Image (tube, rainbow, N blue to C red; front, side):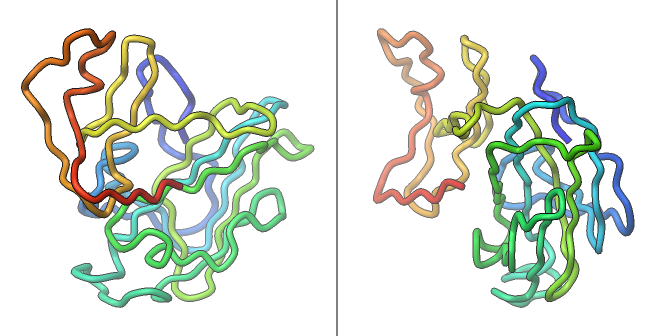
Length: 207
């Protein structure tokens, strides 16, 4: 679970019930906590205490077991599962390889999230084809009716700018080439934002 802080620290996810925790090699993307090297797998659930209010929920996944060049092989439909929040469906028939590809970071974003009447956010994961899993949970104060801005920088690592905003690494493009220039951009308020670039024929799929 992530609680926003000045240093963007990540806490271990907690209040879980049932099943396994694994460590895996890092995936090809460079997103989230420590490149998402661990996962919780099986039929499991979380009961996360939250103060009353509106939140934004982000669930982080990276399929490193199934798919091309991974240990178990397979492709689309190798793993399909459901995610429930406070008793209601949040993700139905979720196929991560179909959604993002194997060994690729995928972040599912949900706005207007609130705890249940007991003051907890209840998340549960159930199997349809092979066991569900999760790499990380991120919960931050939300803006009613709106998703929070997403900042992405053309670099292979994230960046915190001079205004304190965190820019995610460039991880959602399947084309083009990512390079870092040594020349400093003149006249920019924050030259580091312009040091990297992706060029070529570009396509982005941003969750």
